[in-house]
Length: 418
Image (cartoon, rainbow, N blue to C red; front, side):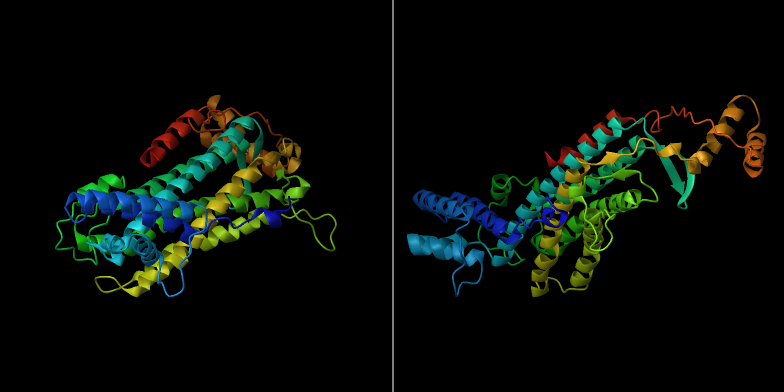
């Protein structure tokens, strides 16, 4: 499989939202029956027909017909066409505004959980590689200069633990999305005696947006919170992709991938390009711009619904799809990574161990400043010969990765999605 074919578009958010519109309608009509606006018989026939529409959506056969504005109108049209005036009752106590809001909340809740699942899979792969290569040393850098010994265990594990911070942000966005706006109508409530607790329970929201204006104000705020969490994940992935591109370079030669997961050159037969990670880096950089785009779109809008908000879908939907692709691709590629276990045999990395030797002298009783000067003079005079053994024991160091504790942190961060 060539890298150009690895990136496939297999997700259509608009199609996904259609099922949530039916889900919201099922909860709404159950509430309407509870307050006497539908009979039990009407509830039953509407529920059955909505079930049929859900099956049509599931089969991918749902079509918004010419002259019908959106999914909400199409569902109502199908119900009315099949059931007559009973179908028209479904809109009682609702506005298209809170219909859209509940669909988006359900959609965002589901997609954030999907993203969290993708992060968890990548985390497990990174943790597995961290343990597999924990004893393989590699150079560590500061200012992009050879600095101190690191290890592949530290490198892989660092990105695993960094993802936990991203999941914490994702969990916060999930909690913002997990609030029921249904019943806010056009943003100012309804004179019908709506039972919003019932729909909250039916749709399995953890709570509701109580103030109806606050519910409408969440349009844009939910997307902004989600985008910030997504940008955090993208930042971690983009950083990792840059490392991979650099470490694949012949000047480093730390890692490689099978030929079928790299690309060549039309004139340079030796080239093995990291196209997958370059595309990933570009996609992740683009995703990191999304919070700012949403902030600018929603800045200083007057209170209440404004049509500008419709444009949020053009921003957030593709970003969700691209982030999920990046997570999947990163995990897939890591399953084929090859690690160079002989990196430090190269004498260019001898100076990695100066700090280790300074510390050995200090541990043997020599004052640190004197030990530093001693090793420094050896380097300056060309007399330095490194002791290449490394003995790090503290938490989170080369010899004590704390993988189980990091795993526990991730499990705790993922708890909100359960």
